[in-house]
Length: 311
Image 1 (spheres, rainbow, N blue to C red):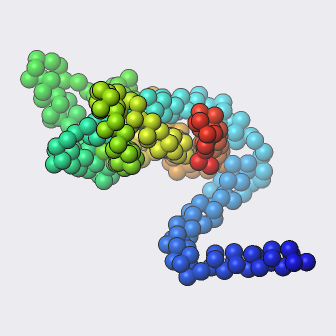
Image 2: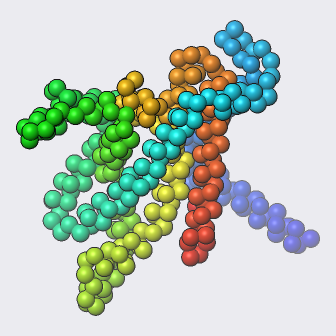
């Protein structure tokens, strides 16, 4: 009986702790986020049912099961856009993911304070420019008639290159622009993690004769290992979301490599008003994203020494 009373008392105390004045302030801070998710993420969720229905602008015609999925899986252009999406994803993980880590390591080696801040500021600024403006800048820079890049090529005796008209060049070019836009901002997280490493480790390594490269490899990289792991797992949540940057840069001449799932869903749903097919594609894409997040979290448990995961 006494044990039961103790449990009740503990429960009351726990409830009081949850609704203390201090915690209420934290709840008010997170309230806008919760409201945003309710309005824009959970309220539209019943609309997923359209993927299993014959739904037209005139209204609901009946349930069709998985017929919409069978239809999109037989579309050749759907698989082309699916393949293109994965090309951009793989390019991003091969070149885009390590880029801010490398920049953070290089910035950490700079000893001139003001030069380091200058590089940080210059590399971070593109992140605050919208993709619409970024696309305008790069279209102008790469223009075969008025772009500065082609001015340099012609001055060196070369022929103008139609960068944004060659389908084969677009994946690499897009990956470069994406890295240029986000490398500085992403490197801030890794610089913060590097700042938390004990300086005595570097002093001890220096006394033992370790070079700067050896210190980076054996101290800095292991020190930011868990930060890299967290960013890697979280990156899978939006890995297939490519609509805005692709849509503002693509044109009909590079559609064979620039069309991705997001732009194809937009074309099918908004332009052609085939809502069930677009919803089915969106559900298919969301399922893949969820599977990737769970898989990456599972791998993070297996790859870390203490089986740590973030989910």
